[in-house]
Amino acid sequence: MRFLVYFSLLILIIGCKHSQKKLLAMNTKVVIAHRGASGYLPEHTMEAKAMAYAMKPDYLEQDLVLSKDDVPIVIHDIYLDDVTDVAEKFPNRKRPDGRFYVIDFTFDELQQLNVTERFDPKTGKQFYPNRFPKGKGSFKLHSLQQEIELIQGLNKSTGNSIGIYPEIKDPAFHHTNGKDIAKITLNILTEYGYKTKNDKCIFQCFDAKELERVRKELNSDLFLVQLIEFPEEANHLDYYAKYADGISPWYKQILDKKENDTWQFTPLVENAHKLGLKVHPYTFRADQLDEFSSFEEMLQVFLFEADVDGCFTDFPDKAVEFLATK
Ligand code: CA
Image (cartoon, rainbow, N blue to C red; front, top):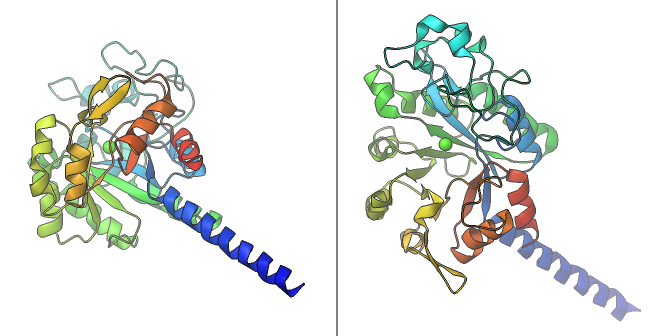
């Protein structure tokens, strides 16, 4: 009898250890909800963020542009005219180039706009035809603070611990307009408790000089990720490693060619890992598979064959589900 009890205990302990190991293994690859659950709802709306949150990714992404009165707005571009009805609401506020800029509007004015599924402002055509219908529903712009309060509130009410992944957009453009978006954003992050690499906040930027400034001049201890747009930028990994903790390249920079049905990769991931940099490529879309036959195949190739550490995706539910089977 006693033997049976010990035996059962042993099985229980081994079982726990095994599931712990499995849990740890699962947690090593992170899913980042790119602009929220943007495959299903207009990007960067609170609705897209709440839906993404419920899909339990590791991080929700925020792209940030300052308003005229220095409020960081969660929006992908410095322009307003491809995701809102600004051209109808404020027809006289465009610049000579014909575009409407976030930075020319106060937070109160921005609140009057309706947000819609992304479209081409010249033709009016929806960018991803099979996503949420353009012009339908009632969606608004919001600030970084409002989104942090949504996520931190949900972390409290659900007991989850989902992080944020803010990106400051075009800091050089902000400087030209007399604004320091890095400083303003870092102050807000500090205020909400995001100060170190342990605080589930990853700070990203395409502008290397500015991200270096965030580390060295603005003395941020956050986890910093250098976004990479062009292949030649991948040659500067040594420099990025001096201030950043990770890189985020376009996924095509990782693919080399397919030989005998097997993908060959560029040395980017391996070289980054040698320098201790995490690799979180963008952007995985179930409705834009390019050379892959399924979304699962795409995820398998990058996450397990190329061995990247995470992925930005418009479909966080699918990536979370995929990783749960691993
Ligand atoms: Ca982004």
